[in-house]
Image (cartoon, rainbow, N blue to C red; front, top):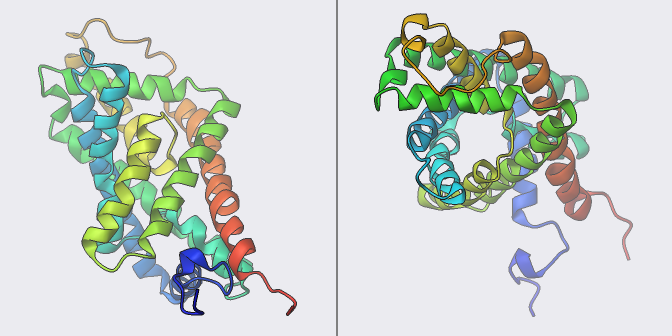
Length: 284
């Protein structure tokens, strides 16, 4: 095999995808924070749109086998990350790959933490604002109320998770999300990016893993639907909604899922690939 063999067959030197990941991280570090925040708001809205699409697809799907319904919901949800990587936006979970540029000493620790904070807040603003707009559109009443029923059921399940379970589900989720973003580094066209993103994202949704930014839409949306007392009074067969509160959303879901996402993205994907391909080596 020649020295010009494809990187997939040649472990050393670092393949182009790893170098691109470090370059992307360096570029993000140099962006102004106002633009970064605006792009983060967009990412929150994009993920929320994917979540709204998934909720609608899952509505009334009880007649389907569990796995089939979950795969269909995952395919719909992948719209969110497709928009993020295709249209351009800043997503906290994907930005966990900044650890590659940080480990390569291209970004200072304080800058990484600042960027994560700005993007996280922007994602929250975009996702919650979209939830408010969808509720204002009364989309929860569509399908004879099936969309709202599904939203409440999803959120009740999410806020009922234990801390350890939520962390573990978050770790697994962002390993797949960051692998999806990682695959886009080898893409040469928009079609390549879409093809790279859809399978991992569909998988994490089908498997029931937890994504912090998605939950910034799913649970606030359900909380706002729960506040529509006139509509809620006419529903029957709903799950116990006593645990569906803002406090449980923040403490029992968002915090542990975020920590899990952070660990899954930085350690299981970013740090591993940096260690394999980009860490300093002594010549042999």
